[in-house]
Length: 287
Image (cartoon, rainbow, N blue to C red; front, side, top):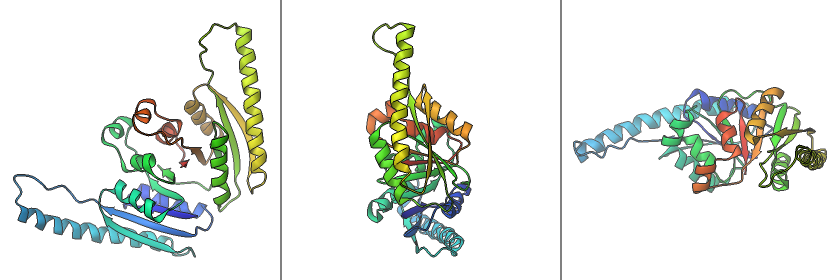
């Protein structure tokens, strides 16, 4: 597996470096750091002064970035996996996304600075933009990643399952892990009146169907190195998944992305988006 790790010298990015120890050997690892220069275009600043300041700022930031990359590479010195480094000027999210487009990693790992929902909605953040636009899977870390021994995988349909199972087959872990396959019956409001008995019958049949579906997926997992079990939630999908993850104390949530873009994502949100924002454990969004 090719992994791209974004670092910025923060505690969160150091969590991403340390998290690599919980995965099996990668085919190669690329460490990337972006130098974001300030915008000094202002009527009160002469072109000569602006250029002089930018040269000095770039020099200082470049030295700092080289230190970050060198320290991170030293942390990975014990691994036999080839480690490359990239230091590039530009907006961090743009640099990460452009590198992902050209290098074709299977996974981007990065820390989240923990901006609140309102602040992130207005200003955006590097992790948020990468999550929205990355061409590959993304693992967002808000804190240290524990050894991955229990993974919760919520699925909506067979497409979700196929994508997640394919990713699991290519992903190796340093320890054996148990997988819990979860699906959620959202208890929708029907456009016609029904009796309590009819409502209960509808729910029972929906749960039976969901159980058959996830047991079939768990059986497919038996072909891999993972042990699998199943669980069904009720109600709001994101809330049910978060509560299940908390109750089971899972080490990782792995969720598929429906690749919703533009206005529909802004207005409706998505389960994966909510999980990344609100989960207390790391979330990997698989594309």
